[in-house]
Image (cartoon, rainbow over the protein chains, first blue to last red):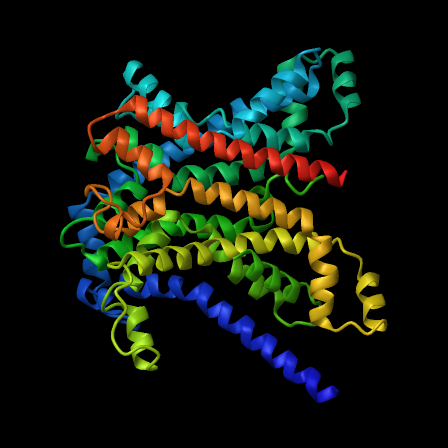
Length: 273
Length: 217
């Protein structure tokens, strides 16, 4: 019986280690690929080579990586900021101010969460063209700052905030904005962190919408550039690997830095029932 | 994918396993990579003389290289492998946090009654997690229906060429709508109709989910 047990144990570990390797291997390969030439990458060379410097130089000179990274950072930064202000105010409003129509309006908004983006794409595209925002970053940011998911997520966590504190602040003569900015936000920091991380991920990795509205090379974001590099006739895989590493790095850093909030942000509020 | 995630979550919930934290982080890592990044990594690994074929040839599982991305069937296999890699850890975290809420006593009682680990898994874990399994299943279905980034980048020159994957084998609803709007003669009306079909399917699935979730309360 005892022996049987330990064999099981070993099998479990073998399974775990196997899955571990499968999970982590692409990351290793990505970093190894960064140091190899295009031919070696496509042949599946697994060891480190000496092409890293030339890959990085090519990336930054031929593909104007600085500009593209700046684009991505700009779009992501403004989107996260916008989401945190606009969507959190919406969630705050839904939670704090009561009115007879509140739940109906809220239900309607939540319903929009079910509408897949691909269905919104066409009307949104027409709208952006009419507003002359095609090929601008504002077109990208403006369409994403009112995130239904974030409103839903934040409202769910705002429910824990005691209403009495707001009433007390009102009695003390604080204005509504003051209550929101100096009392509410500081005490809801962890929810804001989770929301920020979620929107950072979504915005940094966005592909479909940027692909549609950013049609000039100058405005491209990192994901778009990687995609177009890899569909070239003679893709320079080593350089692409370098670009992928650069694109993945910020997320990995955020992931390891804020693991707790990160998981909370990804799971959203679906578990808090 | 969901089953694999469930097994992993069950194993990692066992407090006697060592290095649980490291395993958990590693399994979750794929879920943070960008869709484009992992798709292109998989595209390279599954190329004709690429890494996967190299390994399989070396251990003599196959005799000639599998044309992963050149054959409609294998292209789908590649896509599914990629999706499994990307989303298993993500679903595992869902299950793991639910498993932590199942009281230890239930398992202990089962052990006394003579149920082994496998029986415990099928008769306790799965029934208790049923609502969550349903939730993740429906979310995955909705997500897969809307698949766009992966097929677009997995196929050779997906952004510019007329077909997605060999013989259009990777054509998903989202890609179809995109093609209708931006690749062929722009036909916004028809594309909007197709996208309404997607809305309907998603709405239907959501209603089912709400109904079943409602039963729980």
